[in-house]
Image 1 (cartoon, rainbow, N blue to C red):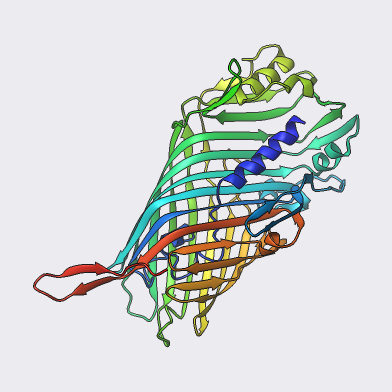
Image 2: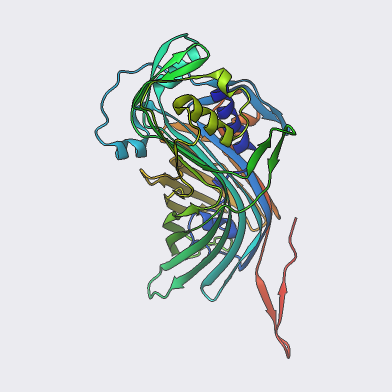
Length: 479
């Protein structure tokens, strides 16, 4: 059906693009320019003065609503089973005392879907004189569906001819954008044994495509045969901008990448490092940090559509109405026509803004012995009621063996405080790769989430040779 197709497309899109969790890598002492995505002050005490990212990419999704049945990945061969909904149990409804608190902690078993992705293009970092500078270029995709009602999960997939469904205030957001990020960090002079570093990353955001839907009130709907009946009083906001169009005359899709919006965001962070070194291979004794990430928004002001659907009478939508719908413009026109008899009735504006997925990052990294470190890392989303993006809450504990040209790590991750996974990361020379769900590569299972990433980067130190004229030389990369 049409709604199933939308969910499948969301899943496939996020898999074809890439992720930015990089569990197992970002806290490492040789993460370089990738480390600033966890804390903008992380590089000042790093062991390398120069770090250059050639390219890095990956893919991730996380959901307790959908899963891929009997799926596994083996020897780079992908076997994907059927897409299934998570069977829900009809629960007794009760009032939510604090919606913001409820939204933050994902209480009461409501379902969700999170997908993140990016491609990092060539960028680099330089660290000298207790200062660090970095410049990165990225193409990113972020998406989520939050607070999917258990009624929808249970009733819709039972194939009942007429069934009442209660839809809670649900939010959905998908966004595709470009990012140019400039990072600066420095060490604050201290007289003690601890180093204190502060950092900031300023980002210019270029909005390409975005879709945001928000159901503002708890409202019933009736599932009918081959369609749905929506009683009067519904209140839904539907905003989008897209470079995708469908040429119905020539029967082909068209996508012309262009900028439809501008925005900005900042990351602010602080780290405290105990640099006391007792071993030749030890980088630090311990390091802790806290940061707030992605504080900002994108303003879409070109080709944007802002819609508010507030039904006065009962509306019936049948699947056949949308049989030939292949883009958002046509979807809006058909939906409005059958609801109001006028396809322009619900257009309320031609611009909107969307918040980035603001989150709190906390980490600690501790040296154990003989190249062995262990780290703890938490990413906690900040709650919001406005239009914007959200991400899952994640906690990870990662032991790793780390050398200059080789590193292996084993992150143990807990998503949204209740979904555990075990991952793996390896770095050898200029190559690195990792995943947060190693069992998915070997064992057929109900695949509810996975991250995979890989890339090529090069780190080195500057060396000066004494002569009449100082000459800067760098070491060649080691494979």
